[in-house]
Amino acid sequence: QVHLVESGGGSVHTGGSLRLSCAASGSIDNIPLMSWHRQAPGKQRELVAAMTSGGTIDYADSVKGRFAISRDNAKNTVYLQMNNLKPEDTAVYYCRAGVVVTSGGGYDFWGQGTQVTVSS
Image 1 (cartoon, rainbow, N blue to C red):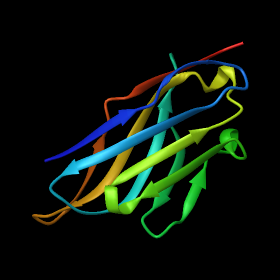
Image 2: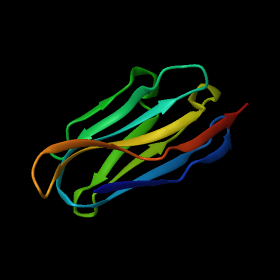
Image 3: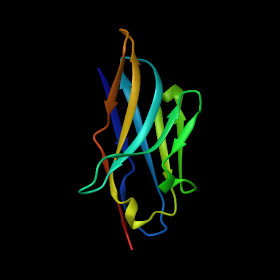
Image 4: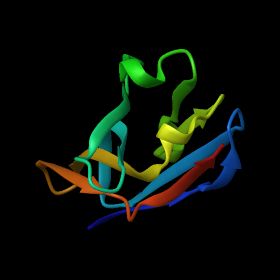
């Protein structure tokens, strides 16, 4: 079994910053892909940023230049530095990990979500 634990959400004003963390633990062999997604009320969940274990990164257009994803592969942890936050960034943010488990096979795991609220 694999568990993802997120932290770092909160409430800020427009222009503020937050840093999210997501640590994976359990029967992990390696994690080829870790990503952040978000879901605002009444909207579908969307990809925010993704990073492979080799360092390839992708961002949603709406966050390019403001958000930065990074990983510590030794700690199975992914981070999301969010700067210049806007009210439209308000959402529940979820960590996702594509994990190769020690018993073999690849599986997707999700964190429990952390609320980010940006007020004007």
